[in-house]
Amino acid sequence: MSATRRGAPVQSATADREIVISRVIDAPRELVFEAFTEVQHLSRWWGPEGFSTTTQSFEFRVGGEWDFVMHGPDGTDYTEWICWTEIAPPERIALLHGESRGDPNAFESVLTFERDGAATRIEMRTVFRTKELRDDAVEKYHAIEGGQQTLSNLAAYLAEIVAKGAER
Amino acid sequence: MMAAMARAATTSDVFNAIAEPQRRDILVLLRAGERPVTELARELEMAQPRASKHLRVLREVGLVRDRKAGKQRRYRLAADGLRPVHEWTGGFERFWDESFDRLDAYVQDLKQARQEE
Image (cartoon, rainbow over all chains, first blue to last red; front, side):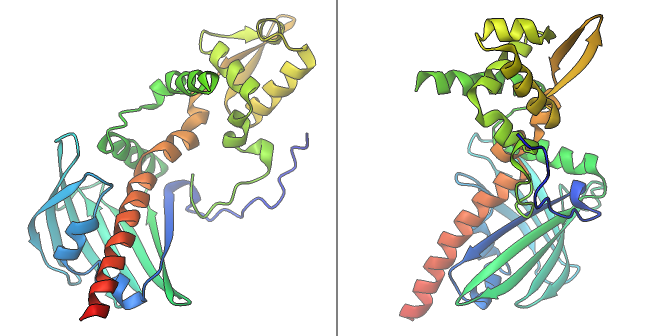
């Protein structure tokens, strides 16, 4: 078995503290962009299946804010705060995401919308100030999703996977 | 695990490392504590060179650590190495991946509605 790294990606300077998520959606770019600009759209899709939102205030402009509560399927509420720092229709949206205004752990996400034939490629790049904040966000969203798995439980989790594998 | 980061070579990837059932068996045994390769091989009824090879893969991806204790080399679980699996199974990335699933469905409805107008 060779340990040679074939085609290992060149890591950017921020690789260990960023998360990049991308998706191709079969719709024109203007339409996909629009789904990010109005609360009646955002409230229809924000969060995984089973989540809903209640909006306190929403103002889609640079410097504007979205104050809302996210309701998890288990009934837990999470206060959320978004502030837009850049809006360039229909190409780019940059926003700060935290739990409330002035959240010291707020992080910036940049959404880009690119034409991909008749479809649109969305890329969301979130860069955390430190690797620790990135890891914290992963942990927090784990909790939000009801997974409640912390790293300390991983060994047990792994054992479950193995047990399930053995049942098959 | 970042979507933009293509999986590197097979053995340097924690996902590939735990895809092999015998390597998962080794990790489960190591939950109970540090073990030398001889014990692991005996319990799993595998030849020692094979167990050593698995341990080498697990060490390379950061799932086990080893130390010399006298004449023996003892191996222990490094659960932190499972972080990429942890992240993949949930967390920020999955939150957004699932949000984008809903966004996709919503935009398709929107597209349909606009076409009917």
